[in-house]
Length: 166
Image (cartoon, rainbow, N blue to C red):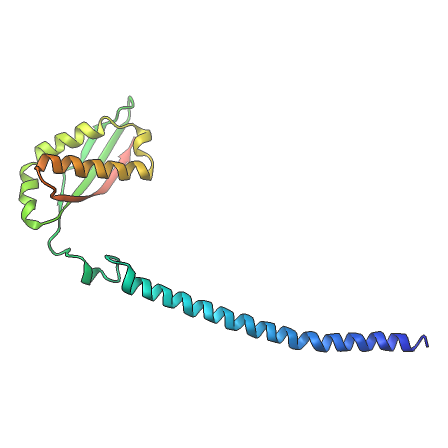
């Protein structure tokens, strides 16, 4: 009898080992199918987003934007005192004008635009301008100020090409 017990235990081990191998294979097959499905769905979702939902994105830029009309008007660099004592900002920017016909208007108003920019930025502190939100707020303020100077909404965006605080 003592010999039979080890044989039964050995038999149980063999049976359970035989059951786990096919179970593992089934699980691996299922995981492979799930992984492929996730990849296919993610790729399809990305394609659908680029094709149908991302208006003005890189994928649809040729079809959705009338960028042929807009033009960038460069401004001379600004070196400004900030409201914090001893702190300076060097800023170079370009104004995106909605229509090419309005670019000469901006060129004719550069002195007034520079004055508005200097007045606005010299009231800002380093803390106001050091965050991404602060820079975005400054862009919005600059668009408003320049459009006020122009007397109509001609500038739709401001692009900083140099932004150095000291």
